[in-house]
Length: 308
Picture (tube, rainbow, N blue to C red):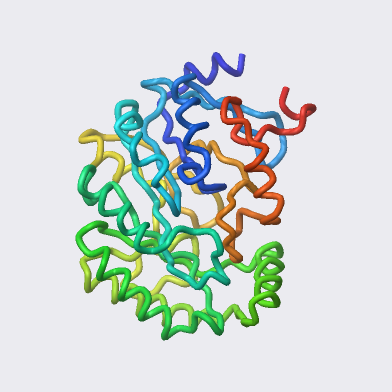
């Protein structure tokens, strides 16, 4: 019955994925699931696993979230033949103590240039998030860093998404461990200081023709900042050349995203970012990546008693 419901559902936007980096680590799995026409997802909130149809006509559009589009870049024609896509591309260029495994900024910029040349300036959104204040990355560092990156990205993207780090318990724990290991300190500043820095970063982005938006932090909105819609039906419509309708249905309070179905899994990204909200244990994420079955229906297979 579940498969029948999936086949009869209206076309859905597929998010791949705010829970992990599918283009960087799981492109082989994704291409296999496109060929199969479906994938299965273990709900991170409990309950039975569910199926997401990936058949032609069942997907209204794809939104990819990544720090390394390289493995998927040669296959985007195949993706686009099924549905339009947009890329949420995170590029922060932080010190290695904060993001141990990400590709070099110049490699990321090269991927964005290749994406823009083939698919146009609406295909990618630059994410400079989360903003983390530390002894390695004080406010003045962020201003200079954003100015340097925005200068390189001018004309390639039309939007930058900003947010401040959310110090969830697991995030604070991983940041504290990295701080001890690498000898730095980090802090969660008061809202007024956050707004001031966000306002400055938005102004820098505007100098290079970019709209600045803020992801799911409405209390930090400042002049020059719009509310982000990371799953953006209007952007997908522009890319498709036709209207793609989707109601607003955010993932948490303050989220302005369009309704989507995410096909990823938490605790499976091996980028090694100390501030990541999606990874409780970097070592466990690396183990899950190593054990992943690229031919399986799940990105990360749940325990046997939960997979039925």
